[in-house]
Image 1 (cartoon, helix red, strand yellow):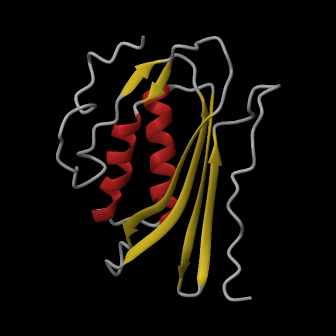
Image 2: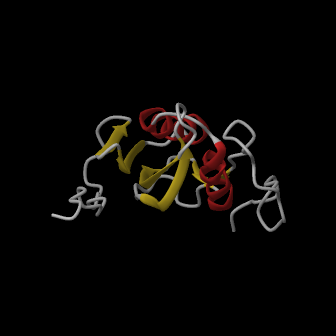
Length: 152
């Protein structure tokens, strides 16, 4: 069984963090270290704020990673992602901040993020980033998010 004794949020009633800086991302040891496998998190209702207007921005975010020694604890990731609801930043900055924060925490073998932002000003913005090439032989499914087509 995975040791969860050091976790501060799992199984507890915790306040929603008001910013990514206040959020506490936690990790647990991987019970399958030495085996390459992909973990996928999908956040289809991600929200943040435009830093210029304060208006809400919406995205469908897909995070894939190949763990090494650690897994991200999913409740802490949920709270971290929700903390962007009051955070003003451009689409690109939110996306890269999430990815780099996870890489710093987990030191995964590989990580990619696809952030499919809904149109603002009539233009959808999609942001993609990954740490490098994925290890050979790992099945990497398509992220499954269709390009924005509007009413066409």
